[in-house]
Length: 127
Ligand SMILES: [Zn+2]
Image (cartoon, rainbow, N blue to C red; front, side, top):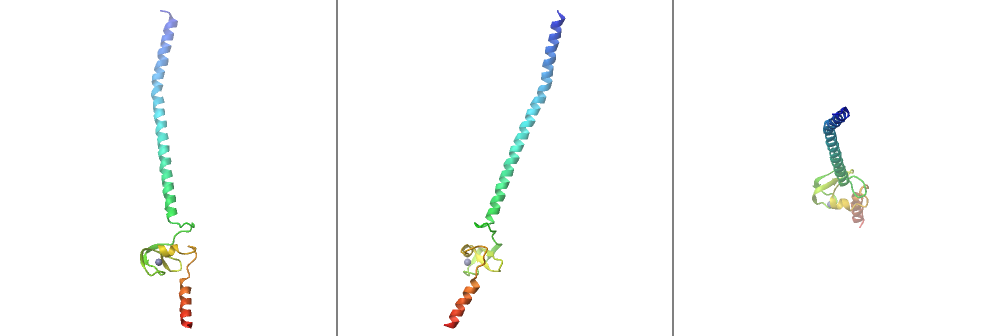
């Protein structure tokens, strides 16, 4: 048997052995890469969902004009004198139901219902 053939055979066996030894590393690397990619995609989806929910929550707290709604609770509306499950507590101390609050020409401008009643009273007093 020529020595060159023996050397070539050993060389082939060595190459095959190296391939067998490095193959699990490649498989592990591929699995790790796939896991990292899946985790990144999941994290991104979670982040996007959280961001959309936060944006929706913020928008639900703000009116169409971009101004935040005043604090609300159950109570009696000062404008229509009806009790409501949701009454906005205006910074002026006035309580307005959702319907009367929506009638405001500009939400951040306080309604002047007191002056209207005063003028009515004064007209009644003069007549
Ligand atoms: Zn009302």
